[in-house]
Image 1 (cartoon, rainbow, N blue to C red):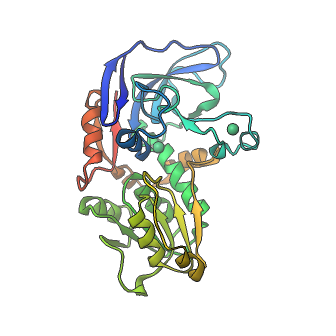
Image 2 (spheres, rainbow, N blue to C red):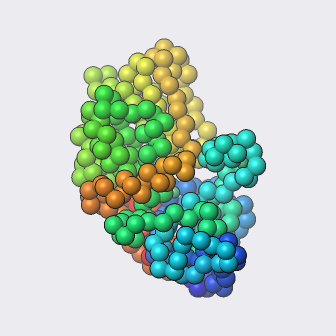
Image 3 (cartoon, rainbow, N blue to C red):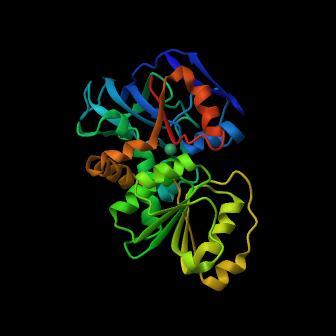
Length: 330
Ligand SMILES: [Zn+2]
Ligand SMILES: [Zn+2]
């Protein structure tokens, strides 16, 4: 079968590898659509997260059950499914509480074990969520990033009383607009440097779009979601926030950042981290995608074959292309 392998920084290749066989307790899934995530780009650019070279990449997917291993119940061939891609130790205090996203050993398929940029993936039945037929498989591939957006909005305790700023109109930023819109948040302002992405932000419900942080404090916001993770966005947001404001940090940083901690002290700001999602967010993401407007699929700007993975990565890595979520379709 075809699979996309990480061969080192900037080097992604589609190769022929053996198709997995379904072990007891596991499920073999024929991948329908697999999304390229911001964390895949961190791997591509910096080699972050991957434990060994030539791993099959990818952790976001939708697919159809091909076969089930011995002892598997509740699933049968033909079922539409998505996966919980988190790989955890299962033993620590956080895992025992079900807070898997806080496990110190948290990793993802496609980083610490074979991923879903392949024709087939084998996963344990406990890691599989069934998707109802109301959600097409293309939309189902958004379950994982929608779970991140739901977690970000929860962590920031974002309500309809807030004026919200979203920095970065990539997939997570765009999906956060959709989730915040459903909460009837007072005003949503989105910042990005790409006009094409800002056009998408508007279509998903942004009230205002901007290409730079506002100079004067008249447009200050109550809560910001940083879906970028750079020194420049961090400092821009610390300036932009109202006193008592909250900064929800979703984007992972590739470099250390310098900032003035006094802006946090004097404005009494809250800095809030978001690491992936809890299991409930994956379940809620499925419900969200059943009910939401078809506009959500506009986040998907490209659908490409596995053979074009290299091209997809260089497209996402070049600024200003307007690409948001790229799905690979085996
Ligand atoms: Zn992801
Ligand atoms: Zn653990």
